[in-house]
Length: 112
Length: 111
Image 1 (cartoon, rainbow over the protein chains, first blue to last red):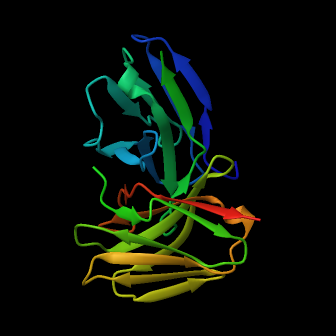
Image 2: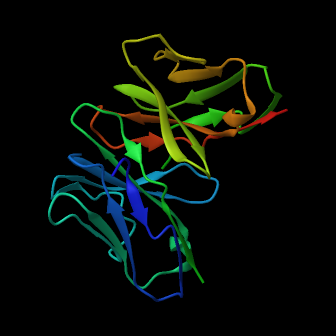
């Protein structure tokens, strides 16, 4: 596709429910990043992939957060046993070898 | 944790006026980038300035960087209503690395 595509755009989850957020990168983009953006804040780094390798997961807030990119293309961010503090917009960004980062529209997660 | 802090937090101007936003950061950087964010188009890259550059222009945008003061400014000239958005600065140790964002300046351009 022409840009980074994220789905779903909106997700409402009951506390304790597991959720999976999908990111379809720009074709050929090697690097993929996930960010979490709380209301009124800037995005905060969660994790980084280069192709299928997860090179940095230092920003994942707890072991309830898990990300994968098994074939070096589509990535999924999974949150287990969601809690209210997980409510945020989750942004995916990808970049090519010599390009700036392109962001998706994000998934707005609301945990009730 | 947020690396940069934008100033002011909110700015309201009339169409045609210039808007200046500032960003301060804490650690050494390789480059600094400015992004625009609104609900319609998400987060869009505007301009990147490298640590060895002092000023850069792109259309109606002018960015300056002062590494001695660890600060940058974004000037939007002849603002338009469509410029209404949040503007965030972001830094990274390298061009391929993760970005650390500030909290953003909310700009409103009124007709």
